[in-house]
Image (cartoon, rainbow, N blue to C red; front, side, top):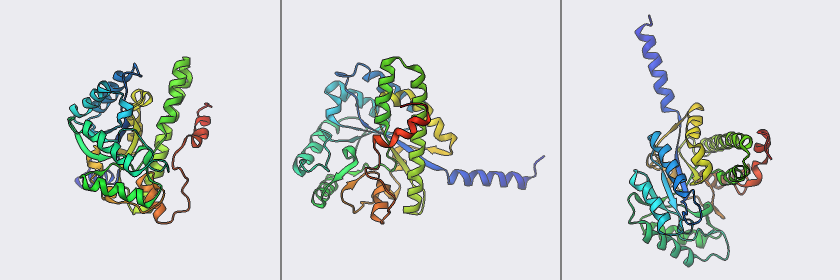
Length: 301
């Protein structure tokens, strides 16, 4: 029989492991358009069902141009009705780092989206910059930041960026071709990609911040996530990660910071590392060409 001292030691070690577990939460960008995607409702429901089974609350950042119309807005409303937060991802999904995008047009797009979205259950005044691009000049960056502050917006930043959109395009192509073997391999490659990026940004966070923050990962409302979300949750747990609600993650002081870098944007951890003078960062932080080697590791091209 174990002695009481050994039992208490085991409990203490377990508690310590829990305290130091890496933590992350889900955020989903864009929303779905039932007018152009006949699977929109099914994808939306699959994501919500899997989050519900995992007892997790996330945040969705809809962009009106991605929703199409009232049917797309109603799919977003389902997130709020099930306890998830709804943020703002703008009207037209403009890239603020493009020279041709003016501050006035950009801010009008945020306001237009707010007028449609703020009436939905779960509305939360958080703004997610499309493409994670926050301005190619200090004037544009600071003007948008000031406008958001005056409107009472909080940060919609991410700490873990990834390229799920790239894997989703491959998923749709393999599915259309009926290539079930490659679909199975792609799901494995995709989860490996997410784990790799999460571990990278966590290490970068520890180097930059001095601690492992409560992470927010950027995903999209798409087919590959609808097909793999439960597996994603399980894979991260198996690697020692703890899933938390997004509201809990955003309480981390990390998301109060506003890095002073130009061009502005990317993961907030990436931006803070750049501000500190890191010389190991790639730009853009995430993009399709970086994924070639990962696909090859799983026998894909």
